[in-house]
Length: 640
Image (cartoon, rainbow, N blue to C red; front, side, top):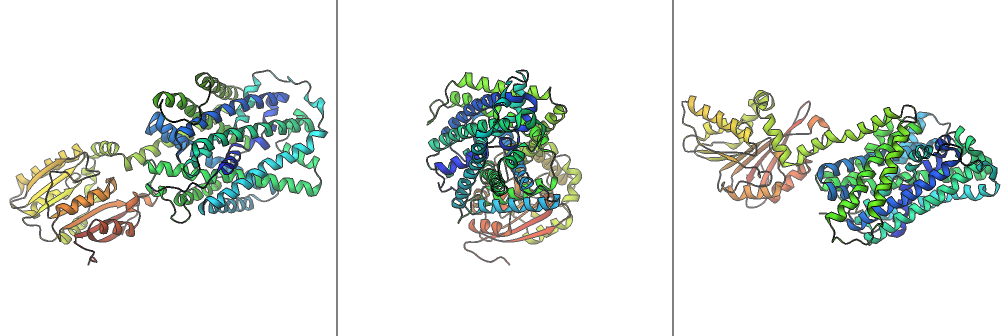
């Protein structure tokens, strides 16, 4: 497995944690929450901050126990297994990318409020490409960006607080209890987004020096900084505008900046806020590719995305994928800020509740695992925090108009991960592949002539040449499409070994071969049917010699291609031929398995196993077809 260099230290991780934790609510959410709880928004902030510090401590323990690049996904994998961990990874990726786009769009709208929608789109696209370019080029550039952004993210609000505190009106805080106490939960629902992003720092675990200690410390310190900054920022806003003035305008922070500063200073603060938001977006852009890399390593995402750049030491393919995804989200467009917030928070609560429950599960599951940091009062603390999170969502759902529809939409977005999971498992999980083949085996009888034409068969047999008296392995025989022809071409002295992992496919093949034997007047080859559930990673040990190997529709299912090719090489004579064919580039959208990604990769793989090959791709409307013709050699010989 390719490894990262450990280039991130405490200050870089602290900076990323500040950038990723400090949500847009910190700067723009006070107006939304003030209309639900008035001056009591300060009490809601204290409640949420105390809870946030505890959640940060829980993430600190998880990160110190499992310091790997997957972060939240890795923790869920250790606690729950493959399926739940994929959903957590998908949810984390969804939240991170949506939040990043909102940050960029919010920053652009903040600094250029009069720009047209198209111009804002162009500017946002440029920012996303620029930030991903920095993420592509490595740790040093990313560290400098994170530290600079964190300074601005703290500095801009701090300048506002220092200027505003001395002139705020104390009478604006009386009466303090302006709303019923349950309204605190509704405000907490919106304010909690200010802290979403604890997991981002954990994605850098494999690139951080001494991650078991550095990451927990950085997350706790970042949460404390945001807690203090947010409290004084909200207090300053109330002191200047009053809670009613704060609730009356969605741009209350901007209006307060205009009241406090001269034109020149106003511009400086505005640019500072703009750069701070961009820096916060950069935190997600730098961290999220590591999540994609972790999913790819565990075959829950296409394997191409686990590649690490040989020079820059970054998950560069994951960065490129992320760039495309972010621009596509930009193109889709967005609702208003409060609507986005209402969609984000339930999704985040689902993920964080799942991960909080994982902490006591993992303590019980791995009691002797090294933990540089342990969260105190585990069972009681986790129970209280989860109760508050769920209560906040329920209070919001039954208080705010149209909230149930948005809650339903949140569940739908998480649910999109289900078909994605099934699709990935059909690529990589032998059990799922076998079950799918068993179910679809009889359907393949009806699609056989459409998907595998007579012309394709003729191409294969033309390459193989005279098969009389030969032993041929049909590796992944399917429903016997090639086997029924091979037994006739091999003749009475020949032998055909038909192998498959699916019992139903092998059953159909056996019946078809029996039918051929009963009605064909010519002598046919001997047949051996082999059921091998492990053929994804081997050639069956009973197969010790063959003159030729054919395989149709099996390439994408092979998990250990290097091993399989070496075993094929061992059972073939020098000059023995192989011919593989499969569908690739499905719908010209879905990625191929890693080794089928390019002709160069295929040639390198087969050459290293001792085969000289020629690769032919045939383009089709919905997908392409690949043929790999090969000959066993004792040295590298160009295939003719």
